[in-house]
Image (cartoon, rainbow over all chains, first blue to last red; front, side):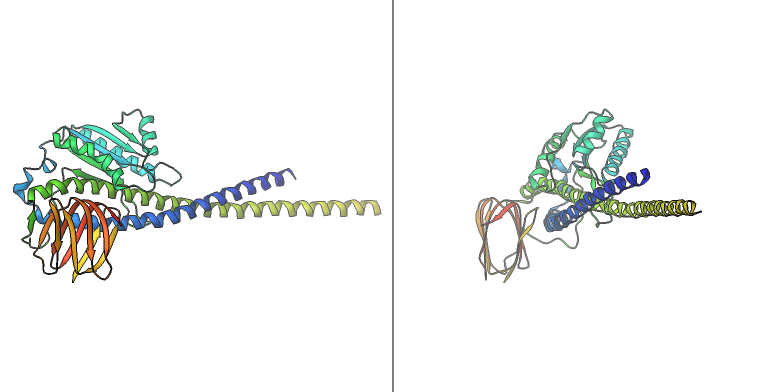
Length: 287
Length: 82
């Protein structure tokens, strides 16, 4: 029963694999819950900031702020790609990398020099592999991104933009629409897109002045855009991992059924054959 | 009564009613009582006090306070409850 032994081995490995994927699914589910809460918790701040900036914003002010400068042409731009540090999450990282490659290709076609900044081991690994120079490569941002992480990523880019070294900054990240919808997405965070005013503007008392408030808030707005990209990508990663591990667990279950059925059939066939041989042998002795 | 919310990038730290708010503005403390005129002011560093049924204290740094129609929004980059 050589085939039987082999099948027993395969059944065992499949069982073990299923145990691992099921655990990973459960871990991702609990992490996803907390990551999704963080995405929701980041929303009020972004809304409040957007509201105030849009109520203070007008076209005259725009010319005086370096972060609002609209360059005529994008000669040198930065692309910040956010990927995960770990794999085993289906096409998640591959989709992000593809989106980044398309964005970079498009920008280069427009005649821009592109600096590529990558967060996450997976993205770094890919671009190293194809031999592209990375302006920065960071792997220290984990499952729980903080506002400080976002600031450390974007502050240098903001300074370069304000100084006129960079003409635009794009962020490639995953949107977290829902657990099942986490499409990769490219947003331009600099120059800051003028938020549109909703409803009539109110007359606020402004301390110290509209200029001073905007000087303070525009960098916060940019940092927050990056922070939200980090948080959404972290949640999307967990969602992708959960989906991938769920289907892996299901597939392992299906495979186990098939292997067990084959094994049992082989075992029964073996027994039937042995009985037939015994009966046959006994009949020959009697005859 | 004032409707007060204290938000940081990571979380909403406080949401509720209060009778007055004392915030550390860039140039000193600013007190906010009901029927305050609409105002936006930049925050400095210091302690934010929300006085009401439950007195809440936060250490805040950077950001702004927006007052409009008896709604106070404290939006700060760093905030920790004391």
